[in-house]
Image 1 (cartoon, rainbow, N blue to C red):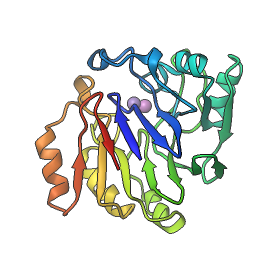
Image 2 (cartoon, protein in one colour; image 1 turned 120 degrees about the vertical axis):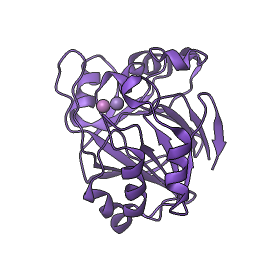
Image 3 (cartoon, protein in one colour; image 1 turned 180 degrees about the horizontal axis):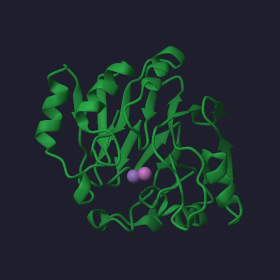
Image 4 (cartoon, rainbow, N blue to C red; image 1 turned 60 degrees about the vertical axis):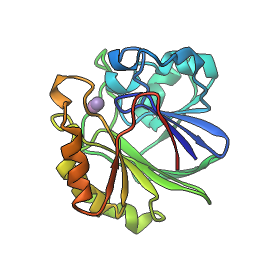
Length: 226
Ligand code: NI
Ligand code: MN
């Protein structure tokens, strides 16, 4: 399985020959100027919540690719009204897609569109098939609900967690989260994009290393085979 980082909380994943884009905020990210959004392939766009730094490129990618938007019911309804297609979900529910089973799980954050439209409750995604199982947390605080993931889902191969502090948990809380979800391999996101979330990357990696865990911080545009 191939994963590519586009900066902030934006990733693209190739899973069972399907292209999945998470929280596309690329063209508006000064640090991701080298990524050409018009060339991205997408069968699905997964949205953790409605904030601008997660949905900026949804319209253009969905229009270019015809991708299906997967998110909470309010966010999918918002895009349905714009003529874009989607699959609405809510917390605790799962659905079998052609790339695997996806469970929509709790996140502690907020969720409204830039125009003030209500964006439902924020969430994260656990996705599994016969090859992989991983967790994309979205913007969230550390929450006890993360303990439900190993109780209700297969063992995680890796997890994508926010580590930038201020708007989400910091890397120390993300270490505790990695214990809650029983996962050894963490890919960090939501750090260094703007002032309030600048981190010391070495200190973050050390915090995980002390617990015998690995924190992977990808460069923008970098891909990894997992
Ligand atoms: Ni947010
Ligand atoms: Mn955010």
